[in-house]
Length: 150
Image 1 (tube, rainbow, N blue to C red):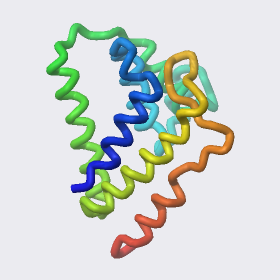
Image 2: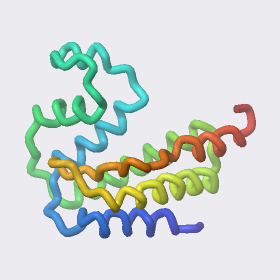
Image 3: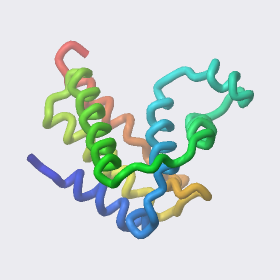
Image 4: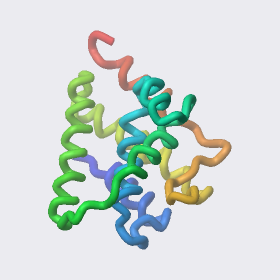
């Protein structure tokens, strides 16, 4: 299996300075919640929080902001991170992607993320996108178009 995407993800985290900082459970989980919200219509939830028109990022930060870090052992954090990978890969497979197509999609996103390194992070530590950022969706759509039945 080609692990270039994994190496590029490591490079992104290292070069962005994310590996030099203390582990921040709230920041890490807010980014996971943000990604989970992106394909959903969360208008009702935004209204409950009285922030109509909120972005996934704003909504995730609000949700996670209402929590506090739990006293979790490093092994439990690792288990949670690996479970997220299992769920994410499973979601790709459920969409009909093969292992190779999934790894190709991962490489596309990892490569796009590396282009963000020229910008820096927001005040919460999330990597920002440059003005000339080319989103990976068009290339990902090519993979989806090649799946039998799509």
